[in-house]
Image (cartoon, rainbow, N blue to C red):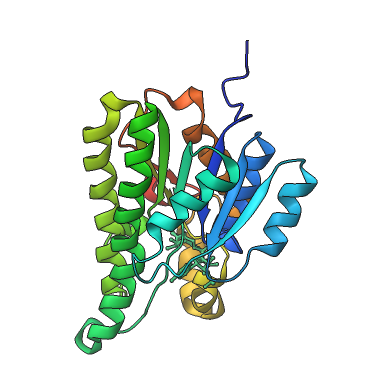
Length: 251
Ligand code: NAP
């Protein structure tokens, strides 16, 4: 019997795979057997090397997801280059920090467009194909701010709360068509995205004091959750938002 977490023969699309959480998830999926299309603005050369070293095929698809212009081409190129599309990980995302009273329309639109609008339309483009083949796995990267308010990040909180709702809506519509839609909510993970927080001594201490695990997460901490949700083991997991947070939400 095949191992329930085996992704051999599957093709995954991972957005924002050049660094941080996206890179770790792309490599974890490849380690579990998947071939990977790494989608993003910055070519994911280092990620591709790691995936090739695991003996898997990889393609790099250039796409700026601040608009939805490239989403159909992402799906088409994946199918043309790798022949299938089984797993979509919507990871690319940005954050803008400012007090709510000073927050600009530019910072609102930039974050909502990348973190929410492009996520929906990439789900739609991939979902249409997956529904046609009768199977698929979509994993959206949510946040602690899918559950909590946060501070000084209004568009980010709105976008990630939206990702949570969207994940459940799509799960409801597509569960009976063989397509599962779930999310991973990372806790505080040491990446470029959180560099400002890590550098702020008092915020860093406040964060660490509240994490039961007593440390920032590493991008690799997200790999197992992604492999699980992408695998046959998660066939009956629909619309779930899986926190990988060192216990932050339990506190
Ligand atoms: P990161 O190191 O800043 O990586 C973000 C990724 O998104 C990069 O690959 C980046 O590409 C890509 N991206 C941003 N804008 C893009 C665009 N317009 N088009 C294409 N790609 C774009 O941050 P990270 O921490 O790994 O974040 C990954 C995801 O996890 C995000 O959705 C983030 O909100 C979420 N998250 C992170 C944490 C955390 O603690 N780190 C916690 C909760 C959720 P470039 O390098 O080209 O900019």
